[in-house]
Image 1: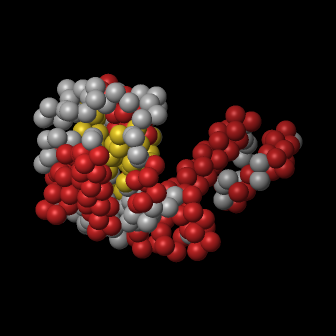
Image 2: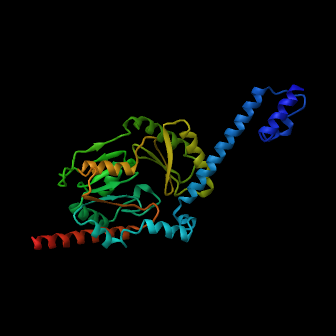
Image 3: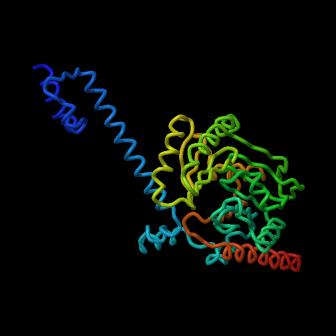
Length: 333
């Protein structure tokens, strides 16, 4: 009688014992202690929680697909976002007017901004024209590449020594190898706020390579202070399996977190550091901490999906404007 009362209480308060076990597992003669019932309920709820989280991951993976982004947001939502975040190219004259008397500092994303989005992340090369445009901008303005990629990998793509590079989402920052002529700029700057996580990141990288071997098209990239799992070439039917593999590894490392980019899952340390903080650090390294005499310009591709041609055009217009402005000043003087 006591056992029947326990079943009745659980059925009323926890969506029914029969939702936890099949009917054949609940013979009348079988007894369940309160502890047994609590364990069964706990396992069921944990399973539901994991399932809900997995569904959310897969939905997020779908929304990160460039072909779906355009249909995810309504026209009204996208127009509203653009009102508050207008294209830098369309606002060029206003930006230049606001920069009078200030030092422009350029921050550039890499993938999808300086290079096209490609299926193989190891082949995300920038064009010679884009490299020339970035080199010209760096002659006139302090310029930094801020990316989720490994700093050394991005440097091997860009091959310009006069820039600042902030890799691993700003967790690996290094100044120009050439002399820096801007204000109090520290060309020897090297900042790595997540150094203690290097062994852990290496472990996770190796575990993910092993776990995802069975999923065709999946590519795991070690970005030094974070790990990227690219699924651009993975069949959408396998996304749930891939997300489960990533989840199973990540669950063993509570000090790491999952974030997402365009067709990529990224595992990184749970420290209070991101690209925004990296930009602030670089401004301080350049001598512009809490300064009103600086105009930072960041060009990325996450929401606007601007192509590289527009970025190159903006950079060239910026250089042309600087040359004209400099000539006018020298004429007045």
